Image 1: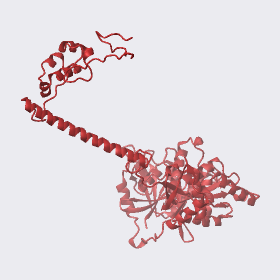
Image 2: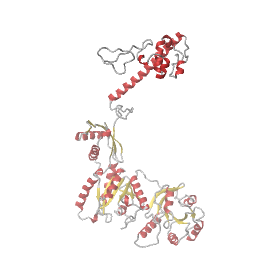
Image 3: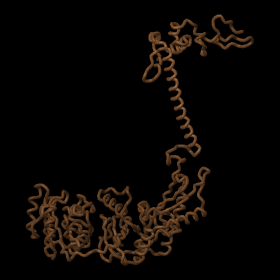
Image 4: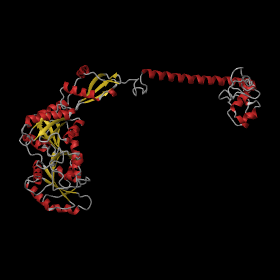
Length: 589
């Protein structure tokens, strides 16, 4: 059994900061504004190898009336009575104040061990204030810094003296984890009152003031042999109205509690149910995948209760179809009427939320659902669901394999979810269906990454790539044969051959001077006329006049033996194309 340690002191001395330091995580809300913590908050922590059960308390106020401060003081006194050791924290930079002396006098009257901690003692600023603690009569103070972690070794040595004996440590029966239930809703909806009614004690602060709860307070409880962890949260207002920094921190803490919860109790004021903020909170819980139970608090204020409950159920079905069939419990936390129906509904919803459906039953249901309402045809082609299986529970999540999965309409997906909820009796449970398609090598973007529209497009591209590869091989082979033939011709003509390539280096296009000085090839030696014509083709018109004396109009595209093709004579009765007439030719008639 860990050592129970209550961290007490006046407001704004760093109790929550030290609480977070010993817990190892930021659980309590910390702000420069005094009086942030109001309820008792529990957490497991450790310092060295010493296990602790921490209790963060509200700042001590010297009041004794019906005000909120007086109720906060009662919570602090209850924590002192419950703890094994009280850690009295004061601000060493401010020294011992009159309120610290009043609180120290109260602690001396209790038959509980007390350790004095002088917080904010980093540096030399807190040395003088730490020495003032001797007059409190609670022993030697320990200089610490909850923000920077200084003095933890001295605090560990002081707490080690109160470590429980080995015989007192009992083995905990942790055969099942507790069901985490988060109570959420708008401010002043009756959340803390409901928790106190369930626990049977005034565990949380309540009152007519709105926004009393700031931290998310978790309380371990047992109902009918089942371990329950109730988490009371701060009220959620509309985002546009949340301006204060402290309220933003409370809102973030509430959202975090919803994320880690299993069942969410949406508490609404029965006189004004289902306002816009209530719908947004329910939608948030559904998007987080949590089971939802609607709670109508302050039910004792409703006159025509039967008609009001029927109208509420119809309104819930219409406004929140994604939570169709969620249980509705009407109760009064003040009088206790209807509270007995809450936990059976929570256990039933938690069981549905953890449901696992057999694959065979799923596929039998899928065939039945398709026969009742066949899948629609998109662009003339029908979507065909083939196979379905459940991937996980909490919430139930399914995967559906279908052809053309990306074109499945949303209305058919909703039909499958509603039919699944009705057939397997899963009311109020968020369901998830992921639609996938099997790997198709001929489909867009799958398997081999082809971008064709079908099998024929894929085959056409394969044939085209094969033809391109064959053409490249043919070109390489032709080039190799040409080089070998040129090498043989050069060797027969007695010309030098490039040993590396096995052929004569081809003459590149050069200027007029370089063209005249170019060495003759074997082909040019065999057919001088042909070589002359080729040189005329490769060189520009200005160079042609210098190389060849043949008129340009007599040099045709098709030459034989190096001679220009004869000009085409006009035939009697035919028209001559303009531009084909040359010198000495008769003009067309």
